Image 1 (cartoon, helix red, strand yellow):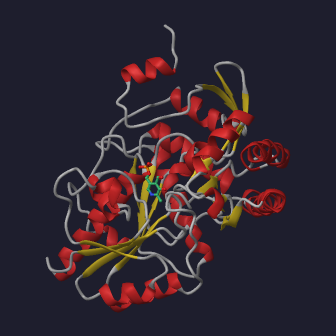
Image 2 (cartoon, rainbow, N blue to C red):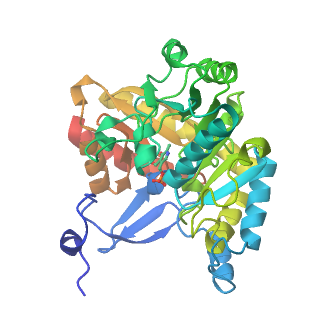
Length: 400
Ligand SMILES: Cc1ncc(COP(=O)(O)O)c(C=O)c1O
């Protein structure tokens, strides 16, 4: 069979428009396509491949578990799921874990739990969910409605109700909207898809205080910030604020699909047997891989290494900017970095992505004018240097 992009166009639902080349192999932070062309991977599968491609600890966990037990469903539990849940609760504010298969599913569970908690404790009036413009929480109908990009949620008929939005970092607007009817506030502790936007220093603390005042749950979507990406296991650990519910996915499995919702003992009690579930949630293969990822990522070596790499990345991007004057801002935390194009290149982020791929570097965008970098957390420093040298060649072509 001739497996190529033309066949993709014939057989796939056209909701994606991937690059023309087809990657076939990856090792560390390098990827090769069908033609043997090699790329430095700064995209990391959209902040997923936190240990790069085919990390030996992950391959070992997957093959060992693959020779033992693949799937049971939640009619039975399994050892990897229990071990992973114990490690996640030991390392965070949470006492309880619900496993899902993706970020959207972890968020769906978080939203349903928040609604059920509020219904049980305060009655049906307390159902308002507040989230933030430009936020992204996944593509199920509930999560995409809570996400703050209407273009993604419109055109599918009536949306789930009682969901409202305010601007990120606008505490006054949030305060105006909140009341005893607010059931939950959902936010990313650093907006990823929306353009790599950090919270102001006091914003997150202010949101926590408002949630406490109105008996509302604070839900942190750490699907993108989670699992080491910002230099701590979860971003909240550097913000001086704990959420009531936290969702995690992407880097949790390092490339194997898994998601999880973490919460406290008291709140968890509101998802009684039968209220929510998933056939694959807590799958032994996924949990075995995630446990291996956890053991590598949750070490000071890796977490401190993220901060070193962040500095190198930002310094090199700054050097490129000094030569070509293309960015108006270089921002983000850890290895979730955004470089916003200035007015001259407004709306042209995709051109840079394509030019970078031609030169042999994979990057991402976050909106039309932000180039996003979410590489492996253990990317070798020489790969950062090489990948950015290639990126600079792309910049020179577009802006030189
Ligand atoms: C913050 C955030 N939440 C949720 C999601 C959805 O995750 P998934 O695509 O695994 O459903 C994403 C994906 O980009 C994300 O960045």
